[in-house]
Each structure stands twice: as C-alpha cells, then as structure tokens.
Image (tube, rainbow, N blue to C red; front, side, top):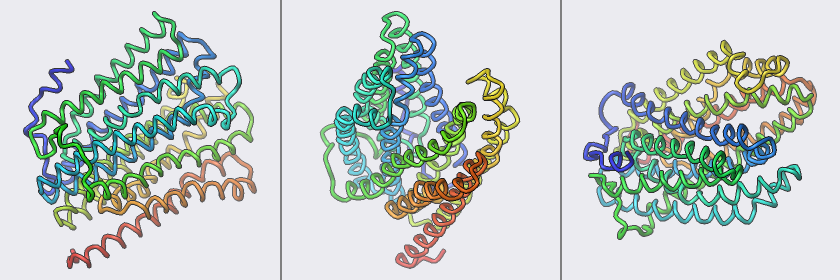
Length: 460
C-alpha cells in the first residue's frame, strides 16, 4: 500500500492557483486538509485511549500530563511549516523553476536541522519543565520516559511538515492526507501491539508515535523525490541558498514561536478555571475536546489561504489576493459556526464520550454553549494572520497576536475575571480577545498590502 501510494502519477500535482474559480478551488483544496487534521486528532486520541484502557490509571495520567509540553513543540513545527508553504507558493506564483528548486532544497535542510535542535532541547528540558508544571510524583517517571521517546520523532515530524508544506504550495493536499492516513493507521496498530502484547504501556505509545512519524516522513520525502515538477527533491542539491533561507526564517520562525507561545495563555486560563470546584474543572476539560475539532477544521482554510495568496502575490495578481482573503474567511467562519452550533445541539452526546457524571456534563455543556456560538469569530483573527504571511509579513502579525491573546487574556483574567469572578466572565475572554486581535490583524494586513501595492505601482 505504501509503495503504491508513493508511485502514484505526480505529473499533474502542480496546481496553478492564479487561475480558475476561487470559491471552488479553495474549498476543494481545503477538504483533504480538513480530513488530515481530523485524522490527526483521532490518532492522537488513540494514544490516550489505548494506554488508558489497557495500561492503567497511572500510565494514562503520565501520558496526559505531557500534553501541554508536547503541544508546544508540535505547534512550533507546524507553525514553521507555514513559512515553508508561503515562500514556496511565492516561487510557484513567479513561475521561476530555479527559485522553486532552491526554496525546496533550502527548506529541507532547515527543517531537518530545526527538528534535530528541538530534539536536543526536548531531551534536556523534559524533566525541568515537568517539575515546573508541578507533575505529580507518581506520574513523573512515566511522563519523563514518554517525552524522551516521543521527542525522538521530532526530526521526522519536521520533515513531514516540510514535505506537506511543499505539496500544499503546489496545490496538492491529497498526498499528505494519504501518507498521514498510512502512518496514523500504523500508529494505532503499534499502540495495540506494544501495549497489549508487549506490556510497554507509556513507552509503547511513545514508540508507536515516533515510528509512525518516521514512516510518514519517509513516504513524503520519497514522493518528493519522484514528483514530476519544479519542486522535485534531489538529495545532491540539498543545501542552503541565502535568499529563500532568509525568507523562510523571517516567516516561519515567528509563526512557530506564535504557536508555541500561544500555549502560555492557556495556562493562565487554566489558572482561572482552577479557582472553581472540581466539577467545573472537569466539565471544562471535557468541553475543551471540542476546541481542537473546530479549530483544526477552520485551520484548513487558513492553509488554503496562505497557498492561494502566496501564489497570486508572487504572480502580482493583487485582485485575487483580496478575493482569497474574503472567501477563505467566509469558509472558515461558516464552518466554525456550523460546527459550533452543532456541538451545542448535540452537546450532551458529545460530552458523554468523556464523562458519565451528569453534573460534569452540565458544566461542560455551558462552556460548549458559550464557545459554540463564538468559534466562528476566531476566523477574523486567524485568516488575517494567514493573509499577512501570504504577502511575506511574518514578524508584526506574530507580535500582534501575542499581545492580543497572551497579554490581553492575562490582563483580562486579573481584571475583568477578578472583578466578576464568574465562569461566564472567564469564557467570554475568548471572543473579546478574538475581536480585539482580529481588528488589529485585519488593519495590518490591508495596510501592508496597500503599502506593497504602492511599491509595485499597483492600486488594484
């Protein structure tokens, strides 16, 4: 199956995003990404489900206590991949074969080195950070073991995201979905084998994750080496080229840092939640499972926006850049709102997947109700960030989102929430921070676009 997937014909894999219907193109581009993101959520849940069902409470707690730290590293890698996607899309838009090739080969080595660096940091900092987070003594050993093994897969994760970014820039989102499906299915099988048969518990699910990441990386690299297009990868050509390296780092590093730092604001929100009783805390935890589901579906349209804006900006087609911004935002808002309202309607059923306690379900349903009608509004912030990166702006959008989320939310917790002291005043910080940050990000995008148009001599 893996060999056949890699050998698929690739000559038609490059999509010209500067032509054709944007409404149809963006939707069709995003659908495989939606499935990829949903599959990733389900496969990640399989680690917890298998170790919880067959490994016991201590093993489950050990794996669960690593979530925040793992998310910091994976968010950085995913964010950095957006830089690769944008710069490659620019090169495709300019239709310069040498520039495309230089970008791909530069991105490959930068991504691999970044993966190695994150592996080293993770190995050194795992124990100190677990202590800082207050990991319970009975869970500490298992959590540390899980992180040391899981982090071994970070170089592979970085390479997979590099390949996925390149294929997405070329308009091909099906291959990354295919390889993710293969590695994800392998992850589930290895989870069961290592935990049930070999009784490896925490180490077993960590090994399964690392191995599956190397399989997905091998698949996507092999596919890039076989592709019939300007983005074909040649091992002998892998080296740093100054201009694409600078562009990738200027967009990718801020995006990666944003994804990592974003988790800090969640720690402060959790601080606010922890001031309530255990039932509220449990209900909040159960309802939070909906966040990744909705955000990751919406994120598919931001990736589509980055690729479409990147190609059209590279081609100098400013009118389609503007149209892409509005169409992608509409899709993200519509899908986010539809999913949010659906979760409100089916809230009890959804929450029953995580708890049987009626009081916990009641508290979780309240959070779902507030968030369900709010999710769609996050599109105004995230789409504006993606659009800014699509035209090559990386640093300022990151500064704005850090101020508008981390800083704004922290201030809110110690002022508005401290004054009212209600769970409602805590949950409302999300939509208010999205409104404030979204307004600033939208202003910056349109200001930057107009400024660059003036520089190009185009007022489209």
